Length: 560
Image 1 (cartoon, helix red, strand yellow):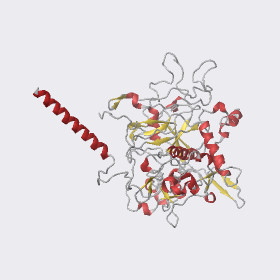
Image 2 (tube, rainbow, N blue to C red):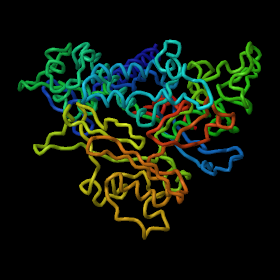
Image 3 (cartoon, rainbow, N blue to C red):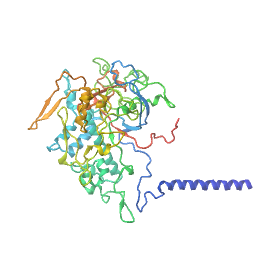
Image 4 (spheres, helix red, strand yellow):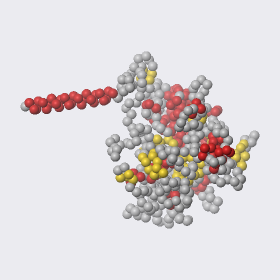
């Protein structure tokens, strides 16, 4: 009997301690471990989202857990390019589109541009035309392709086919637009914006993520009826002194998503390989030649044995096999998701279309300087500031247009965005991690990396000077596009016979094989380059997004 009483007392004591510990743990979430003050108190003070659990997977994306891998070619380099030597890299966890951006996705972008910036207005004409894909890329001097020129982009029969004819610059603009539209939806769903305000956007009243974060009152051209809490469905807290808190969303609320962007070359290659199927504990057992397991491009599964696992050119004059045989099922591009995904759930990481990545091309990946989240192409900028200390917002009358090397005019910025300028000595003085705004040619094209350093002009911050330095080393062509007093463009080719390279700060890497490529280019390690302002009928793109928070989505992942 005495033992029973003792046991009951021990159980009661243990239960009490458990409840006390749970209560303490729960309450500590809303009190500061630094000061002991309350967080999110009704009276005011520090406000923070202490209930944040997990980054929401944005539309169209799949999660890629980061890790270490061998970047570069692990097969024989039969082309002798010597531009993808193997090196060990580590990438952080990120998200990537499960498919390439399709024609229908891009047409949604064009529709928004056309509604908000009507091309019928002279000041907006270049904005819409600058976003249009180049449909003439389908033309071949010895082939009939007018049907593709006229129909591929807009016909419903090609709605779920990857968009092509898009330059690297246009792809980046699409990612910026997509970021704003997704965050606009998130803020509306969270009650920070009036419902359906996004439908009535105009050139002077539209949403921009950076503007909302830096100067929310200037969003939608300062139209307070859209962002005023009294007009939305949110209940705003009022402090004891009558001040309102949590009126606008911020980084701390966790509502706003990180930016869509092009994946870096390292991210794209890591995601395409899908090495997780080769993992055994903390080591990869073997290596992969393609995004799928095996050394061949044909399926070994009994039901589809012999079928190609990707869309590519199989031989001279053979883009899809003979009639009546499934083979790869396409002669040009194929509808997305026509083939099985790789181990990360990504479709068409080999074949269909090659894809733009973010990096500026150089023959060497400089793993001696960096082996973590490798990326070449950083241009550091900051918000332009008015004399009164406010951020400078681009207006309809202050849009800056750039003339590209091919004579095409594109908008550098759009109304509602914050004007960006390069960082200067105010940000770089005594820094050790960077010392200028434009770092595209760092250690490969700048004065310090060339033996002809005496021919370099003094370093300046503008982009033209930086590219001029790169041309000193790589000696790439210097075509010229100028306008006369009447506004007529005068285009001149560089006809010099002394040019030895096509490499400059304006060429970008593209990865993966396409419907026009042979099997050799399906290896994710292969890398090629193309001018960032030009397009082809075999290069498309997909978007990526950085992950915030933990590396993995698994709650209890083993550490060894």
